[in-house]
Length: 65
Image 1 (tube, rainbow, N blue to C red):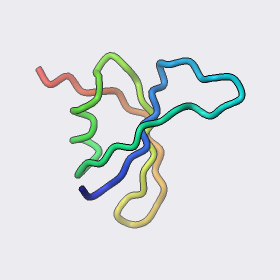
Image 2 (cartoon, rainbow, N blue to C red):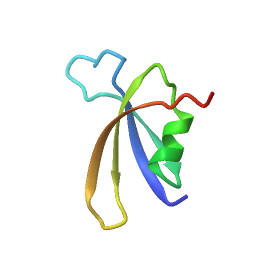
Image 3 (tube, rainbow, N blue to C red):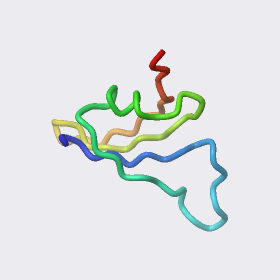
Image 4 (spheres, rainbow, N blue to C red):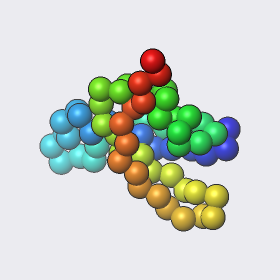
């Protein structure tokens, strides 16, 4: 896959004294990743774009219907 994403679920409560847990996901693009996420939840996604810049995006899953 082209990019690796750190996906943080923002609907879950943050544990005390720890960072928010994340899941590493690999996909070809942000819009394709968005299709695989739950549309009822909001997420914070961190990745490095093709120009080498760190990007943080707040997204929601996309309804495929």
